[in-house]
Image 1: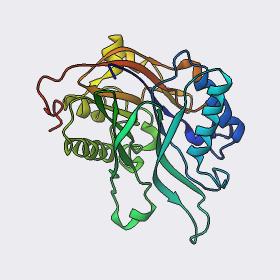
Image 2: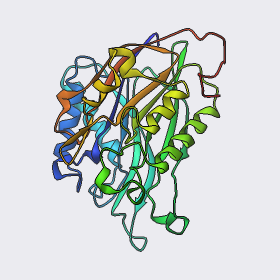
Image 3: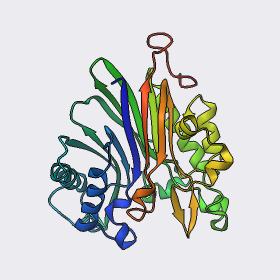
Length: 305
């Protein structure tokens, strides 16, 4: 695995056509075709906002990610691509009434191409619960760890989706400018970093929807722990320039809140996938990296241990 291509994308439950209210098979097909049409489909695709089965997801017999993988592999075959993916889904939360069919569910996903082995797979609950009495109502937030291997190389991938800043704390009038300023978000970022620190890693990538702007307290907390912003590393963009590049929109305001952080790797390229505009309320980030030789075997990543 001297070189690896990666994508991270919040797909809004494959329901952006209905403003996230309901997933649709045609919309799932459009996203599958967009991925199959890439000049180089990524080796690994990390997804946020993926359902299992629910009323919003259509109550199909198959979980949402399984159905999407089928469509993606079909689209790849139709495009003449000798490539298939397998999917992994990680449930986070389910909203239901009286134990009946859930109204909707939340979770993370990963698509891994054939030839890359998943040798470790684990999750952690990183939710910040500010009011314990309402804990059962709080949408759970998780972090996922995948250790991937191909040939003689391994890399650790972490995928997550942090909460929005607590409105009672920052005030809804400050969103989106307060993205990444909530103390609840800082606590979830710290829980994520603690989860990572429990593992000895040489090369790591942390991706996801952080709901945090560049140079926000959450962003700074992660980079001060030794994690490099891959987009800045690959493009040389300044923090000011990052603010001008939207990866998501809120009330027509563009925000840069989806990030890729890394250690122990060198990025050859990283871009925001503007060709995917309109398929979700987020745009994906796509990058190509090369694995570097660790300075010493089994040394933890900077600021992680």
